[in-house]
Length: 227
Ligand SMILES: [Zn+2]
Image 1 (cartoon, rainbow, N blue to C red):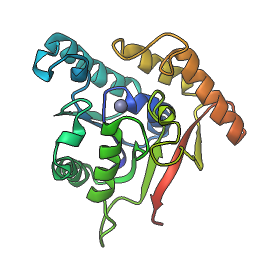
Image 2: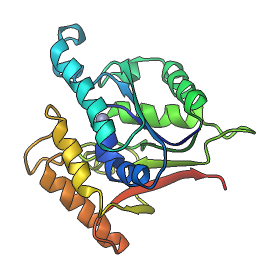
Image 3: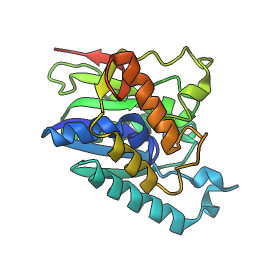
């Protein structure tokens, strides 16, 4: 049994989406497992097979190190094609998530929302919903959709409505760790004013904090809760 399963499309989404929450929950004694379904970065080459293998290995090493930094008990890495999840049969993605759920028996899942600009994020959302249909005896009681800076807001609410969070987690004690974890992803972090810069991540956390009456927060949409 795992308390929390994080299902992300790319290495760094877990940090951007719920890094502070993960670190907080792990610190409170929850078991947290991270699954990253896509290999990452191969879409930056003209052709997938031309991708820099050494950079890919570094990125996967970073993902494991980041998981440890945030207190996850494990990180599972899969190799769906970066920014091409829509070329994979949805059933294949669903099977991966079903396997994760069967293995880890999570009570809570944090994952992408359906309305991000990035197509992989939307596919993951759909796959999680499909794999966790609330059949009798199912273990998943809560699903939350997170926000990924540089994807959720860059849809400008045009894909299918804007991110409208209704759950806020105080990350005042773990914001620094979230920023440190993002910095570990050297190939993904950017300088200000990019949304994946330290300054922007802090500003986003302060903004949601101000919405929720705390110093810093991560924001989520409650997708489903069964209590
Ligand atoms: Zn992503």
